[in-house]
Image (tube, chains in turn orange, purple):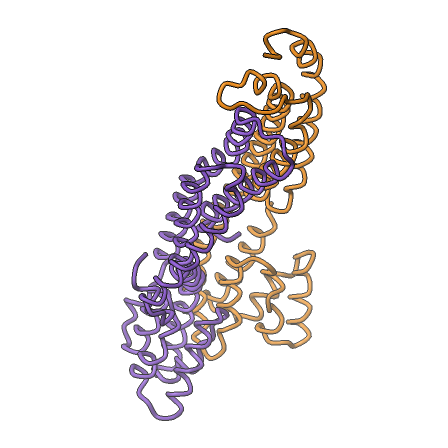
Amino acid sequence: MNSRLATLLRLRQAFRATASGEGLAAALVGAFREAEGRESDVARKLLLGQPPRDALGSAAAEGDSDLGILCALVTGSSGANARLLADRGERLSLTIERWLKRSEARRAERKILQTRGLIMSAVLGAVLAILASLGPLVGNMAFLAPGPQLQAGSYFIPCGVMAGVSSVMLGLFMSGRGFYTNLAVSIAAYALAAVAIAPLAAAAGSVAWANI
Amino acid sequence: LKAGPWSFFRVDPRRMLCISAAVGSAAGAAFWEGTKAALGNASIELGVIVGVICAYFVLSAPRRLFDSYALSQSRGAMALAASGTATLEATHSRSRALLLLISEEPAVGLALAEAKRRILLGVSPGEAVRLAVGPVASYSTRNVLTAITTLDPGRTAESGEEAEGMLANSQLSEESKLPLFMAVAFFTPLMLTLYMVFTRQVSPLSMAELVAAQLALVDLAFYFCSGERPQP
């Protein structure tokens, strides 16, 4: 089971026990007795006499704003009606569970987005490599502007940099810190496409119309 | 560009307009200056677009910041409501209930500390909360705090509608802006490469200017499209 959902269910179990008359600390000990990892200390600290605020702290919800809301409810409960608090907390946990499940769904969507970003980076790298290879041939036809004769490979460096810039931005947008994967995929596709198109570019370079 | 966030941050709208116009003009002029050798007349139109987008970023910064605060605070409103109701039930006193409330959210924590200070100085709970909720951006958090002072348990039944609405809004916004960013990131280098090819630009300086133009355009699109993404 997802660790965040497991923590949520433990907290709900503690709220349910408290709502039925058990003390909050005792209910937390019961719920977190079998917990593992960073939550394993919660029951131990409570049994050593620490109040729920210190025992739970942010250990159960480290870096998780949704679970942090539930933990804040426990840690800010001194002087409150424990049964009413637990009753409200149980209802609140249902909302948080919905948020957590939605968050998991979004995480899955994000993985799909990352894959799409990688595919886009590869396609961009390949297309720019083709443009960089065939660009001098097309440019020498002088459709729009007269200018110096373009040499094969004139555009390899700027097109490569452009492919790198766009793939890094795509990676930052879709994968966050994993942008270097997009960069690597784009550069690999760029190099592969450039090597693959090289014979065609060389052959086309010898055609008379290409040197008009 | 609502005026609400501006008044929340105590920003003078006219000054904000002047600052955004100055930033937009500077960005547009810098873009034009940096790319005029490579892009020619096209650099004027692109410079205007860059300037307008930069001005929009400056003008909308308070709103984006306000939305971010409101989302964070509205998520904590449910815990605050549950805690407030339980404390009110235990103490049967508005002042004591407020004095016992704790919030992990910094702005709400500050507002609560201010309200507690005023209560201890003898101000009535309702007046203390009314004077202290200035830094609170979330409607539901304000509502919960006010409900505790008016002993209205019905209004403290906060179930996160504001937070869910804001999250749904930001997700829809993200879904709309994702294709835009993908199109800009994909087609900008292609268009600039074709421009470079057809205008037969071979000097390293003009190529560097086109790469810089691409970086500026994709970077602006990145910030425009990622501005309202929900925080992980």
